[in-house]
Length: 265
Image (cartoon, rainbow, N blue to C red; front, top):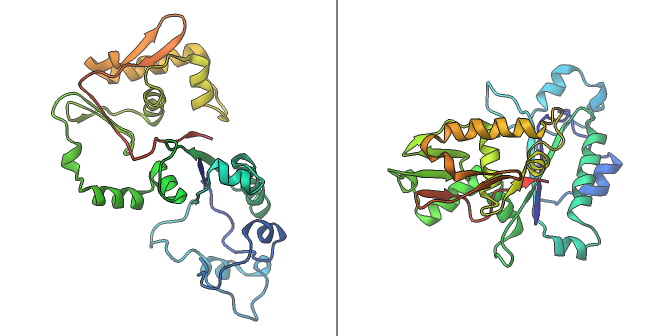
């Protein structure tokens, strides 16, 4: 397995390279590393004492005019065996990064996802992570290497469940699913053939959220999803008294990257 930790709110613009926690987890900076913010002059005041104009000047250089940085993604490539050999685990790494983030910027929010791959799959861990977590540049390179184009994804009749692009096409037309409706369908698709109980859907899709639905609300979400699937709605089966199951038909095509889309870590 591999982990990517995404921050959905930016940390303070000024960097604090001498923070003991940063030294503990980040290690020494390689000699060829390029800082993401403009270096301070030798006579500059500490970041906390700088006027607002100086702090604004330390923004990330790659942010285009008219936009603002709202966070970042850090892809971490390491499988469970390598983590164990290093005397740690994926969970401990995630918690350490979250702790460090909270120390550096208490106002930051974090979200972590685990990237899954078939056992024995080759390739660099970090490349597997980027593909599984739908990094645009990694997906573009993969499609270019495979000689794929948008036309290759077209399907005149039937259902395309495009996990890599987070969309569903019905006879070539977008189904117009909401984010949560797609996540619900994806959860079932990635567990094809299994009957998923309602409580498992709640734990898998609403874990950590402020408003957690009850099992009756899950039925409402599924009913809305099925209505948008129109005459293909029977790909989501109701198993009476238990839950729901995805049934693949001959006219259903599933598109995804070389590794499965991750579930919430």
